[in-house]
Amino acid sequence: MLIRVNYQKTPLHIKRSSSKCGEWLNYSFVKKLLDKEFLFFGQHVDLIEDKTLKHEIVNPPSRAFAGTVWEHYSQGKGLRFHNLQTFSRSLRFRVGLLQEYFSCNFTVTAYLLPSKSTELSFSQLDHDLFILQQEGSQNFQITRYD
Image (cartoon, rainbow, N blue to C red):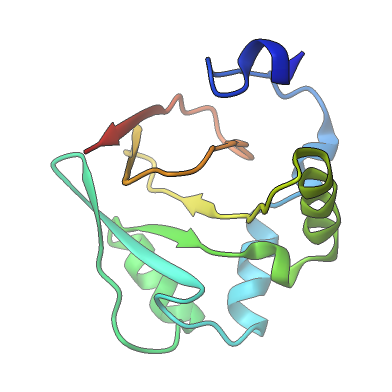
């Protein structure tokens, strides 16, 4: 059904009804990741600043210590985490299933956005996008900037 009706044609919204959804990714996973792993800005974490609905990456050239990351987040910057399947066995398993099913590479990128954010913009989007909103009830508008 997904492939025939929606894939590369229209968005598909599946309402969250299972408590298992939180097993994929949640706040405690992100907190543990920042506390325990050796992360760098630009490689594992990006700081995103919203300027007139165009998201700009504003990374300092250093290691992403938990205190520094949370300080930037409290100042209104969004966080983007890359390749999270590297740090989670369950995500790695699920990504493996998706790669097998679709016969292509998948990666897990997570956004932690300030509560005022209502739009995600992607420039030079050259890939398919699957979004799973883990927490909150915010409705997001997804736009493409060329």
